[in-house]
Every structure is written in structure tokens, then in C-alpha cells.
Amino acid sequence: MSESKPPYLRSVLESIPAYKPGKKVVGPDGRSIKLSSNESPYGPLPSVRDAIAQASAELNRYPDPGAAELTAALAARLEVPEGHLALGAGSVGLLQQILEAVGEPGAELVHAWRSFEAYPLLAELSGVTSVRVPLREETHDLDAMADAITDRTRMVLVCNPNNPTGTAVREEELTAFLDRVPDHVLVVLDEAYREYVRDRDVPDGLSLYRDRPNVAVLRTFSKAYGLAAARLGFVVGHPHLAGAVRKTLVPFAVNHLAQAAGVASLAAEEELLERVQATVEERARVREALLEAGWTVPPTEANFVWLRLEEDTLDLAAACADAGVSVRPFDGEGARVSIGTPEENDVFLSVATKYPGRR
Ligand SMILES: *Cc1c(COP(=O)(O)O)cnc(C)c1O
Image (cartoon, rainbow, N blue to C red; front, side, top):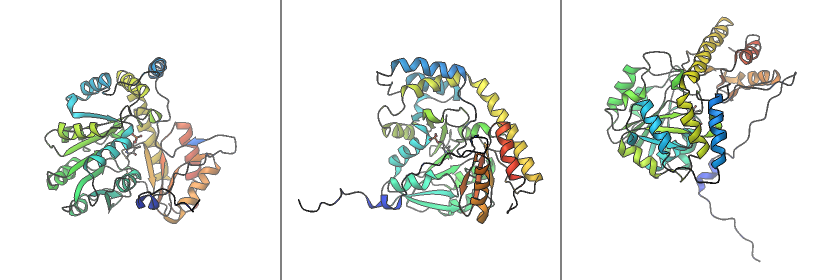
């Protein structure tokens, strides 16, 4: 046999690192505290678990491809027409669907940087060029982002509040920005952390999209709703966009358990929002304790805090790991630390308040 070549793959894959699973961190007393992925520290509510257990009896059947019950419940809850909704396997899945709908080789996606790591990755995978606009004072620089729009721009992402800095853009600056974006350029407001926002000047994307056909809002059940493993998110946009996103869904990607969990979660919303409030209160306590210990912590509207550690980033992450706490380091930049239960946060604070390095 002649020497065979491996099958052809797109060259873009060479620039994309293979997925490396994070190492589980275990502390001296065997404890393992995960503050690295901004998940809810609380499991789904008992009523949601029951709904999932019940739905599991029907796993031999394909799920409802149109997710009719969940779509109706969401439309009622959000007060939007059903035709303005598209569901997906998490908001990351939806982002890939949206990029597939708007992207083509040579198209550009404008987004802030540092922001959510999935943005440049998904852009490159879909053949779209990621245009990264540096943050200004840990916040989206919306003027610079508007300046970065060219005739190749197909889409702009605004992560509000921003992952990993927690900072949010406010109504006045965001609407001024939206007024500058040409009508044919889609603006996606990624509101993965919307439920944690308490600053009244931070707009709800659902009030902004209504009279702006080029604006869509991305939400998820992964964070406040405590359903990260179920993979469920949705987009709210005008029918032209929502319909396109529905077309790019891998058939049946929103599975039966996720649909059942979503419906049950919407029915248990009051209890879920109580948990969110507990996290909001913990967020204030953690930030206060850090400020008191001399740290600089940007005001955060999300369920995490951001520490700009620069060259000390990996060192702090290692100190946390020694105590059994995993955080999310970005080498040379800083660390993002999720808000957990009060006990978990205390373990993190005991490390951070004693940390001898840069703060
Ligand atoms: C966590 C997060 C998401 C959620 O992703 P899912 O795919 O819905 O789990 C989306 N956007 C941002 C900015 C996030 O931080």
C-alpha cells in the first residue's frame, strides 16, 4: 500500500486549540469548590428535578422539534410573540447557529476583548473574521466598536454584563451605539447574566429589540436557572432573524429533558429568583471584602468578580487551588471568580485576603 495522506480538513482547525478538560482541584481536607464556570451553586429546584425525572420515561421518542410547550411558556413569560423566539442547545449553540445564518468567508464579527472566549472561536470555525475591540476601563468601548464596523461587518456582539469583567453598559450609551450601527448589521446582546443585574440604568435587551429589527437578545438557562448541563438557551428577535436561527438548528438539538426542565423552571420562577437574590447579596459581600483587603474589583452586575492580576494571575489561581478552589485564570491578564455559596466564598476570601502578590 502506498503511504496515505490523512483526510482533508479545513486549515482553520490548525489555529484552534484542542479542548483540554480542566483538572479537578482538591484541597487539603478533600474539598473541591468550583468557582471557575459561573454556574449556579444550587441544583435545579425539586420541582424541576421531578419534571426531568418524569420526562426521562419518554427518552425512546424524539423530542418535539418545535418545542411547542416551552415556546408558548417563554412567549407568555417574556411577553413576546412566539414568532420572535428561537431555542437552541445553550446560548453557545445559538451563537453558532446565528453565525451560520449571517456568516460567510470574509464577513466580520465585531466584539469586545477580553470578552467571552467562545466568540472568536465560533467566529473562526464558521469562517467569519473576529474583530476584537479592546475594553476601556474593563468595560465595552462602544465608540471604538462602532468605529470598527466596516462594509464587511455582518454582526456585532455586546456581552452585557461582560464576561469576564462583570461590567455592564448602560441605556444611554447602548442606545447611542445602536443608533450608529447600520440597519443591515445584526447586533446580538448576550444577556447570559441578565437575572443578576440590579443597576436600573442597565437596559433589558427585550425593551431595546422591539423597535429595532437588527437587534436580537441572547439568553440562557445555564446560569441563574441552574441548568448548565441541560443545554438550553433562546434568542429573541424579529421574525426575519428568529426564523433564520430556527433553520440553522441541528434537528432535535433541544432535547426532551431540556424542554421539560425549561417549562418547569418557568413555573418555579419565584423560587429561582430567590436564589438569584442570595447570589446578588453574596456578590456584594465578596466584593466589599476584597476592596477592604486592598483589591481593585470592577463593579459587577454578574455572578462573578474580576481581578486584574497581570503577571500574578497563575500564582493566585495556584494559591486558590491549594485551598481546593478552582477559579478561571486568563494568563497575564486576570482571574474570574464565580460567586458560590457563602461557605465557598469564605474559602476563596481566606486565600485572596491573605494573598501577598499584586492586587
Ligand atoms: C455562560 C455564558 C453563556 C452561556 O452559554 P450556554 O451555552 O447557554 O451554557 C453565554 N454567554 C456568556 C457571555 C456566558 O458567560
